[in-house]
Amino acid sequence: MRSDLVFGALSHVSNRYQLCQLASKATRKLHKPNTRLQDTTNEVLVRFHSTNPGTDAPEPARLSQPIERRRAA
Image 1 (tube, one colour):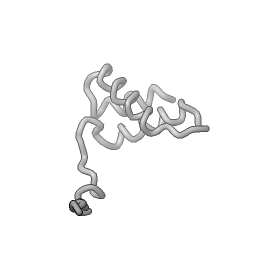
Image 2 (cartoon, helix red, strand yellow):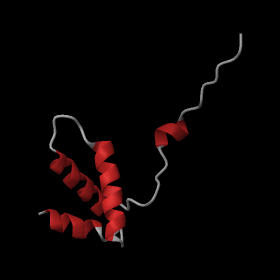
Image 3 (cartoon, helix red, strand yellow):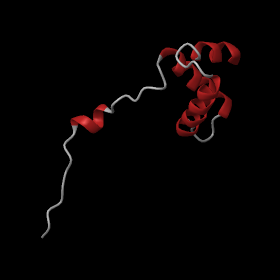
């Protein structure tokens, strides 16, 4: 049930309002067309149960690749 998912996600986020804000932002970013919004929301809450949604993790792809710069002709 979704209430179990919410209580699991609250182990990393102490404030319910903050959990709702983070979950809605993540649901908007992760939602795929032709899928149910409820399934995406449940997936987000499962992810929040296993990781802390408030921390910013560095993106390894962005850090490992050098930035190409164009030179003026």
